[in-house]
Each structure stands twice: as C-alpha cells, then as structure tokens.
Length: 70
Image 1: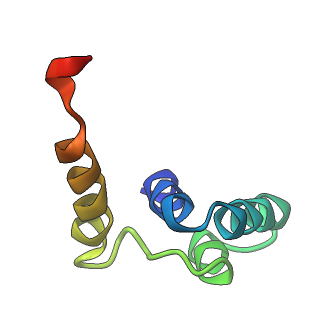
Image 2 (image 1 turned 90 degrees about the horizontal axis):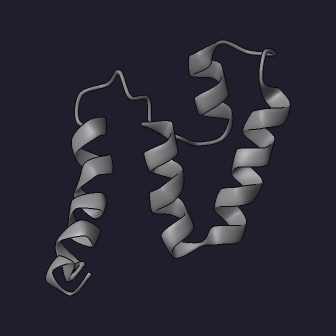
C-alpha cells in the first residue's frame, strides 16, 4: 500500500514524492511503522477507507491505458 501511495503522489509531484520516500528511508528503524508513515504523511493502510482511496487513482490510470494497442 505504501508503494502505491508513492506512485499516486509521484504522478502529481515527483520531487515531493521522492523527497518523502528518502525521508522514510532515513527514518527507517527509528520509529514504529505507524510512526514512520505519520512522519511522511502517508495514509495508514490498516484504517478503513485507505485501500479504496489509494486504489481509485490507480484504477483510473489503468482504465485509461489502451491495452488493445500494446
């Protein structure tokens, strides 16, 4: 779920998404999982609605791919 959240963020602002990812990597091991995702403003995948919120833009992107032309 976190990777998907970063993919969604990168579609609108790659620089901010990458900076957040680097921050997460640097913080690794210093906080609990929830503490880490809070520190980089990611949605908690264990809370209701997070999966749906993250999946919606991914589905929209995939629906826009003209797979018959691949």
